[in-house]
Length: 355
Image (cartoon, rainbow, N blue to C red; front, side):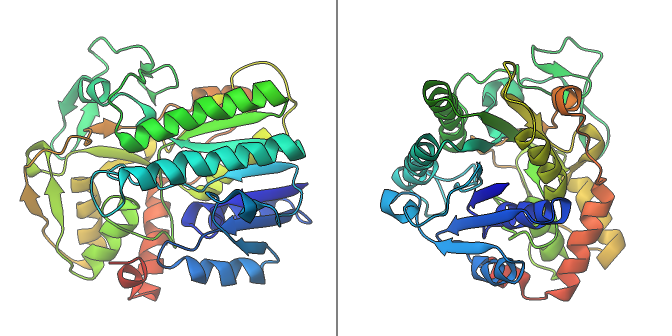
């Protein structure tokens, strides 16, 4: 199998490439990256040592895709991943649109012209912010928890959030580009006859992730705690009780492998892929883990509310398990241990991440 990965020098793209090479000896992988993200250059060197052909290019420029080798499948892992993109952090709304949709358009044309299948990495942030903010939750002391004794909205079960959950706006500018990307991918695949899989990922986390407060929160929190950087609990009373699930990229790569080798048949094309409730933590729980690993370091409370913040997200992976036999194998404590070990080996990681 010949594989092309966009955004290959990012955390997810490089980790998926490494895992797939381990799972499938002899797999041919090429990738393209614009190397805009601080730290990505180091991944280019690591990938080349693994035998991956890395091309420097920008997906927004169609001509930059012309030198790429033919592929049987394209994994689209190139996007601006911050939910605050377009409204904060120096990444304009126009730039967000260009990266997440104009670049995808060129990838879809590549799939059309070469008959390559597409796996699009989407996001849990395609779900409605008001609907997420209205989930029935209860306070269990240091975390919010889904209250399954209350009526649950469509698309939510005791196992978490599934694909049927509301995608009604507002979603955030970032979320809206990812939802639009899903629709475009499905339409191009149907019109031009190439297979498409879409995975709505929860928070991806693991060693080597470039950690910043608005993306890579698990890596950022552990590295910042270890280095005694200032930390803040933002929103929700400033108590750090908001919850996210964590998925290791090698578990995601296992799902992608199963999808790319599945028969092209009618049926669902969109799946949720997250750590699930068993792999979820609040910031307060993450702080307690860090206190045990590195010694106490107290975050400052910051009760100000931000429009895109949501209190609780954990993914229900039942459909992926049903259709592909896929389950999450890396427990969250192993993910945290791996990040912590990497943080100890790389004392300058926050600086290399652009902070």
